[in-house]
Image (cartoon, rainbow over all chains, first blue to last red):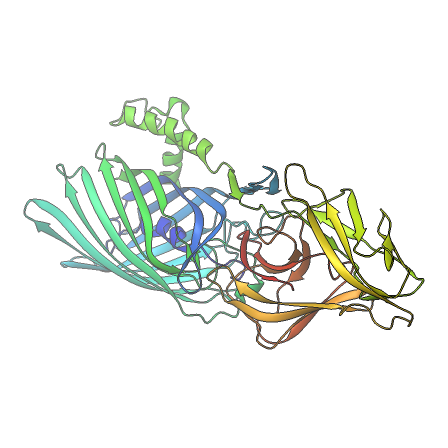
Length: 289
Length: 258
């Protein structure tokens, strides 16, 4: 994988997807803010042929701030800022002697950051449609550790153009919604471009306090990057030519009208050059109304 | 936007995190937000402690004659060398016991110095005694003749690499002496996956780990015939080729040498 091959990309995406607001931009002056901890600890991965192989246990932890704010009723600013990102791998220890063969290492940095603008194309009808341009800023470390194989970023500046469509409806007394998105991610530094897609459904319970969400989503590499996998050093989510088809259930509970907490997990049905272990996220959100 | 973010962050950083946004008034969710203030630092503390991954790396102890010869000229002497590797493939100094199957043809002393005494054939054996286990040994047959020795042993070893993972790795190879170096040559049937990051090839006596292995280098050829020139290593020091993905710290494949 290029400067990074294999694994975690899908989990990294999860961190983004799990915040996505569907086709609805924020109303002017209103916003959504979330402080969350997302992590994955992985000791196996999907290989280039989609089979599972072991690897030394890697961990990535992102403590991040996500924010959406409505500049107008149609234009929403979006920020994903992992202000503390930690990547590590375990010691490799001899089962015969108990001695450390390869010592583990860790790095702690800021992670790759996304900034974006979402524009509401259709906001008044039954179907909300929006377009989002997200810029992926390579603020993280892409070659940390003594072997250069610890990353909190991919080292490339990417541009994701995404269309989101969503519709709200009722099932009996339950408010629900469904949305879908499709995006094209243009990656630089010889990374392959990507298609990103997903569908999402959610329903509220307990008088609107509890929201249950299920997401199905995937990434398809166009395999058009010149970055040679074999000359890379990475095993992380910041790799090249990773692919996956995943799902992510989430529960969000509004403790008050403004504050709430959420938990989610992300798991892959299938993948290629990506970690196979599930990711987890817990967060607290604040709705500015 | 900046003000909103500042407000949000101020809430988190304020003493006690009491849900007061510089107003002095209690806000809904005060207790909840206090819990958040306590829980997030806790989560940060839990973040990513480095643990241990145990690799099962026990191999049989072994002793190898490093410089065997096929024949000696009558009256010549030759210093044999042997190397013992322990149960993780690490070189250890042990007392070697040298013996000859026919001491009238070929005598050998305790240090491995052989003397060709008469025409004939003899097998030299080196043995290492292990505590509580059967001894390990290696042997080589030597012909003693009056003619000058023209050639030594074959001077090459060969094998086939195989994948031990889901990644493609196959092909046959030969390791041969060339001047003071050894040359590792792969045949045209060699193929390796290009999808792995940081694939390296090693010489080792323990194919489970790169511990105590000799790193030949990073793999940069993924199909067809190619070779590596290796200095500072004897032909018989190692018994395996090992393919290892450094970033994943995991074995990809190996090949035992005959």
